[in-house]
Each structure stands twice: as structure tokens, then as C-alpha cells.
Image (cartoon, rainbow, N blue to C red):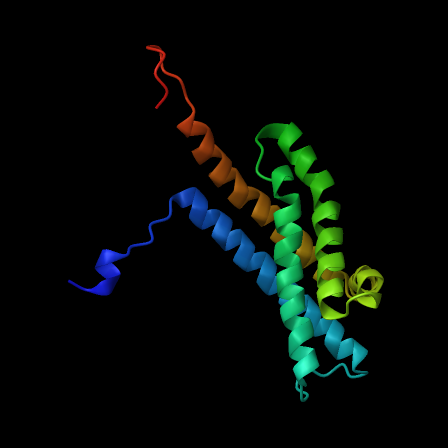
Length: 164
């Protein structure tokens, strides 16, 4: 018997969708941090030598984006127009929390105020990144909807009064 047969990690569809949402948001946060690092370096080229601090800022962007999603995840995935409105008002919360978290991780103290400022400037200079960030968060909302539907089925009470 192999080791992988003894320990098997089985995730439901909803749990996989939440995991995919975190991966997508984290990857985009790392890409956005990479863009900010390149702009701070004074170069617009993608191919340049990155230092250890540059790698740390990119990792901080990924972790900060994941933390921002974790903070605002209660606003995502709800059904209907009220759920869409709740998610729409949650997108700035997630974005701001991600920028503050990434900035604080990258440069404690000054980064707390510089992270949101750098993100706003990056979005202002490249509106296509803002569009992609919006699309990622809308996709995250839809992935969370899968998870919420799955969770809601756990607490359904049938006619006999027994929850399933």
C-alpha cells in the first residue's frame, strides 16, 4: 500500500473552488506587486535582474492579496441581486485590505500607507490591470457561490424534520 493511499486529501467541489479563488487572487497579487516593483525600480522592462527584496515584495503581494480575500470573504458568493450588491461593496474592502496587508508585509510602517498608494497609482497608470483585478474578484465571487450553495445543502431540513 502506498503512502498516498493511506493519507488522502479529499476536497469537495466547494472547497476546491475556494482554494482556486485563493490561488487566483494570490497569483494576481504577486503579478501586481511585480508590476509595482518594476515601476519603483525606474524601468518599464520586464526582463531585469531582481534582488532578494524584490522577491520578498512579490511574495508579500501574494500573501497580502490572500489575506485581503480572507478578510472580505464573508461578502462573496451570496445568491441573487442582494448577494451581487454585497459583493460589489465588498470588492473595495478586499482591495484595500490586500493593499494594506501587502504594503505592511513588504515594508512595515511606511508600507502600510505606501501599499494602497502604490496600488492606486498602478491601477491609474494601467487601467487594464484594474479591469483584470475586477474580473478576478468577480470570478472569485462566483467560485464562492459554489461553496455557499454546497454549504447550504448541508443544513436542508426535509419534510420528516431530519436535517441531511
